Image (cartoon, one colour):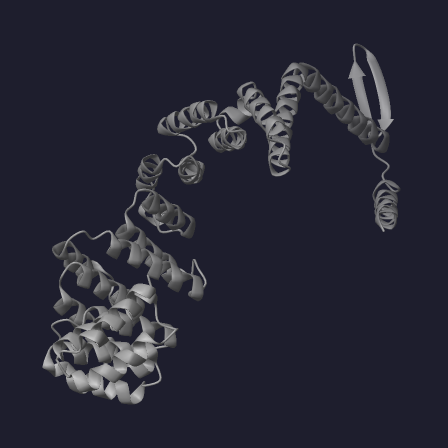
Length: 414
């Protein structure tokens, strides 16, 4: 196609030249030092065009000759720049291929070539990426001292005004490495230096969660995990399990009733609305000597036992079983309704039986506790308490033989 276009243009030029110059009868006379030369106007124009072209070519050749050293310098700089870029790509390829020693050497070579290349000396991100690859390789090689030296040099370069685009990534990587080293304080320090927008990213929240757990700060870890769950950082099932685990850890870390009450108020409303978390908090309150708080936290869930799944219903019932001592008479209608609706559930039966026994409704309590003591699905601790409650009821009735039998049955479950 290009040949056809050139042929058409050549034909056009030939036609225009024949039309314009074919009927040109003009002459050009040149006088020089007594000499006279006459040329046709057509020849003069052709010679003039050739002379102009020759002069232009000579000027171009002279300029090329004079700029040869500069172009040679640019070519050498371009070669160094391409070599540096190739070394950086090699470092990345070796790192992802798990050849960390080679990756480290390639990254150092890229940095050395970058220092010799004026075009790359102003490219701060190139230096940051090369240093990160070198530090990451050293981290994989467990060479922490050299890794920290590289990262310190990198952060110093950032403070002098370079690499802002990669600074966040460098701090996230450094925090991840600190967590690998079990250095939670260093990880938290690096994460606190992140801008607010970066700190809300999923990876930053994951690292903050791990650092909080390493620092034994379950409440902070719980809040971070809640943010991750909102950002869909976990599957719903995994998020639910993690949140319950962290809430339980925070509850178990409460060493007195005041601390537990303050923690309960600090929990997210979604956590307080979780039956498993409430059951764990109620059980902890019972062990700290406040059955009233335990029952108060359990009341909303007991009123809607039918809406809970089997595991949550069992957790709530067992927590009430532990918190039954001192139960108020206002609970009796709730207990009767729960027994009627869930009389097949051994945990509910045990909780109702223990509450009736505490209210000295021994006729109702005896059958329920006997049923609970014999239930193999209940935890051993609950069954032992049921046997001991039956022994106490037998002593109140003056039946010492029955009481001893119940005590022996409780001891057999040890």
